[in-house]
Image (cartoon, rainbow, N blue to C red; front, top):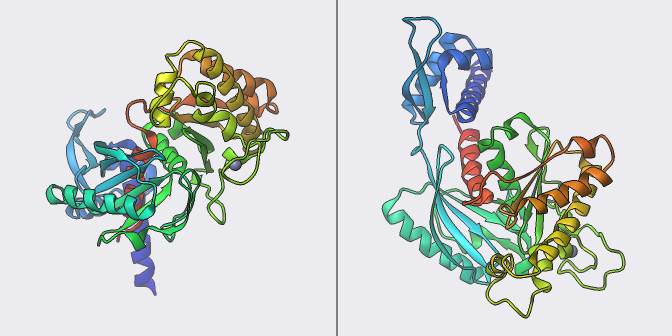
Length: 378
Ligand SMILES: [Zn+2]
């Protein structure tokens, strides 16, 4: 029994050390000992194991306060795992490679086939192609819908009309496959890469695309709910009198007023192509500012409900609105400050995602793979 306990303690400590090295990126054994409360000798022994197993390496020397004392920095071995990342969008799907230090390299994109069979056949093709040159050890999906993360079950991908799709029934790969909702993954990315977010534990990420999805982190942990549909704020009713039917089966949903579809409806005769491309073009049209201000107003109204129900420290806004001009964010913040309960509404920080060129959810898919590796350290 004692031996078993010792092994558990050792694994716990190794995982903890890995989390710290991921958080700080470059850190000495001495600092690890201070942060974990472990003895220097234990840190030396455990980090040697982690180096031998390929997770980390000695990356150089850190400046030292006492002259003559060298402090060797430990860093993540970027190539320890390479995962194929799939950012499934309603209109377009993007594929990249995620590394063990959180970096992502984007490779391909294609129009999203509208049936699971065709979609996963396409993924299988890309997996084969990428795996020819790169040793892929994990496959991670970012999904615009509700995902049972324990069973890789796509419970509901509303904008595609997919229900109860088991990913593993469609894919033939012999590596671990992971999947999660795109807003949940986005939070992981912001938390990992953003200096500000490292300081907070209660975060809501709102992703605005064809729909509006939200991810919730409470006390530092993702909150998915018993049946994985927590954070479906896109379907909270904000207009009792609306006649327009949402795909969820009711009327008046927030996403009907706050997603890019709201703005596109107003310009439907002037635009062509998929919704994401249309939205990019729309922003240049005369009259766009008025419609975008309305959209920001509607987003703000929904955020008031979120602030009142969850009292988050930070709300991060991502998706197709990350590069919006200042007026858009000013309108949102104005509503949140004015209408939310105090002091939550006065204190909450509302910021755009730190990622402008690459979307936060695909970066989050890389972090999800990292977390999976850490959880499986032996
Ligand atoms: Zn709805």
